[in-house]
Structures are given as structure tokens and as C-alpha cells.
Amino acid sequence: MLDKISKKILSELQNDGRISNVELAARVNLSPAACLERVRKLHESGYIMGYTAQLNPQLLDVSLLVFIEVVLDRTTPEVFDSFKSSVQMIPEVLECHMVAGGFDYLVKARVKDMAAYREFLGKTLLQKGVRETHTYAVMEEVKNSTKLPIK
Image (cartoon, rainbow, N blue to C red; front, side, top):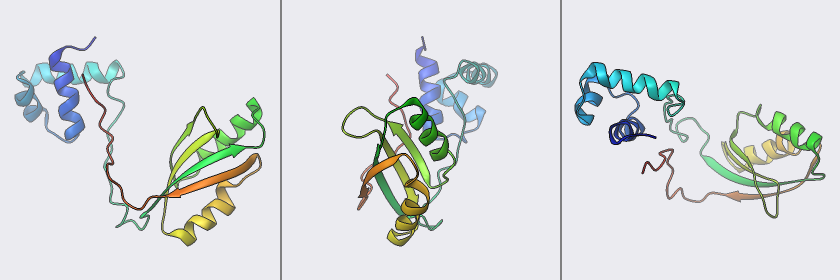
């Protein structure tokens, strides 16, 4: 179980992963040494999985965000494993989730534009084992966050 201070540390790190240990310690009312030890323990116990930079997709020329429902032609372990292995190698795919319901996977991807998406779909995503896809192009990102709720 996390105590109040550890939860505050996690919250502060989600807001700014580049915060200095001294500043983090001040915000959570700990000494720098105690704060550093807490952060180390949070890493070791798996609460903190890593740090990343959030990049601007428009400046990197991948401004089209799409969600794709994927239906496989068969739902066997071999087909699932094959799809999973191949989708993990596709750089345009940001997320891929196996879901319960009317389709098998929900894929989140970023590409330059609709022409690039058509090429991506035809040459990359539509592979052996995929029966059909349904695409939803994002018109406006209302909320985009990686922050988890910490209660």
C-alpha cells in the first residue's frame, strides 16, 4: 500500500518527470535524501515504469490520429500471436488493445495524413489473418493524458 507521501511523489512526477529531487522533496515535505530513497523504492516496486518526453505530433508530421477496430478472420492462439507480434513492430501504432465485444483489437495510430493512412492500412495493418477493419479519424483531441488517477 502506498502512503500519502508516496502518492504525492507519484502525482508530482506525473506532472513533471524532469523535476529535480530537491524541488520534489520540497513539494512533498521530505529531505532530499529521504525523497530520493522513496523514488528509488517506487521504481524498484514497479510503480514507476520509466520516463518519456511528450512530443508534438504536428511538428513531427504525424498529425492524423486514427483509431482502428480490427476483426481477425479466426480467433485462434496462433492468429492472435501472429497479429500481436507484427503490430508490436509497427512504429505508427501507438497502442493496441485486445478487447471483448464486436471486434478483436483496438489500434491507435498516428500518420501524416489520409493518404499516408491508406498506405499504412494497405501495406502494414491489413495482413494475413485480418478480416476487416473500421477506421475512426480523430477530428479534435479533446483530452490526451497519460496521467493515472492516484487515490
